[in-house]
Length: 230
Image 1 (cartoon, rainbow, N blue to C red):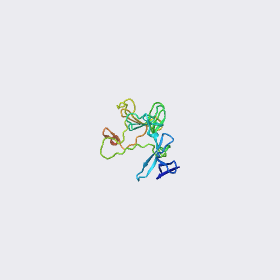
Image 2 (cartoon, rainbow, N blue to C red):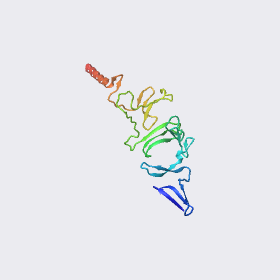
Image 3 (cartoon, one colour):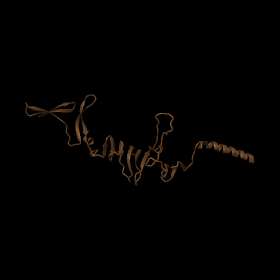
Image 4 (cartoon, rainbow, N blue to C red):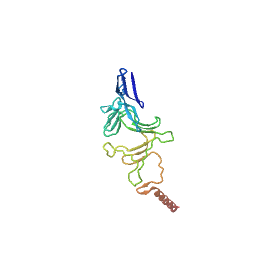
């Protein structure tokens, strides 16, 4: 004969009767058919006790890797597809010579992603896709914590070599429109700005002098010369 004592849907004890006068009581522990999951007792904030399912596979590390996954853990750092490199808190391995997205936030059609942008080596690529043709696909927004005067720009684009030295043999920044070989705007290593298009501005300062003022003064001098010649 088998009987049970239940408390809030939890099987606590099992009473085994050998005959009408003899019985034994033993504690019942939940069991699982595999080694990757167990049942355990837990208690919520109100004091209710309940069984919980624990996936043991995510608690078992073999050579710093969670068993049956490509997730690695090493001293508070997480690596995907490899053990985390250097001091990166989260490190995602992306192979060379392969167009592959390593990181994505979005609904699958629109969003933000980062990965390898070439099939020859590795070139980091950032891609942003807007919700429709009227929205920008990628915003760079800098927000200052105060309005205190400073010489440091809010957004900085810094090009340098692997030794953290100045670039001397290639451009620093290029902007294109659907063609990586035709630059609409190019800043070379000497700081020269090359623009393929028309510049519209209210004024340009040349050696601390307003180009607008210079042109206005030249126009006045031309009118004076015209009057003298006439």
